[in-house]
Image 1 (cartoon, rainbow, N blue to C red):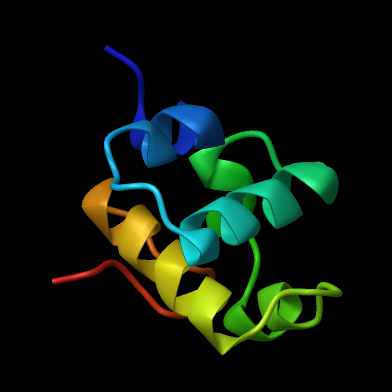
Image 2: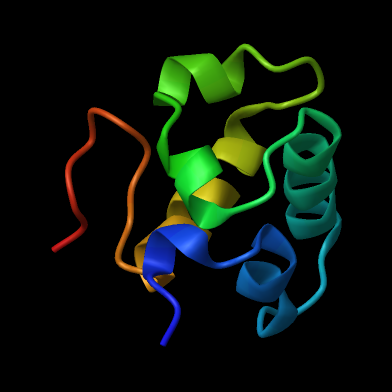
Length: 80
């Protein structure tokens, strides 16, 4: 079984309904070199928000996707 941190970003979004926000968030993370859930969870919300083209809607999407895998951006703790 794959540990949540090792799940590829593509797989995290595969089960989600397609949307512009989801696609933009995923593509922005991939463009910045993030390949796994652990890569994204290793960044703080501020670091994620500092990525060009990454706004509040994308941050909400990433938080939601990470929470579904039992993860959260660094410094935000584990979702309850």
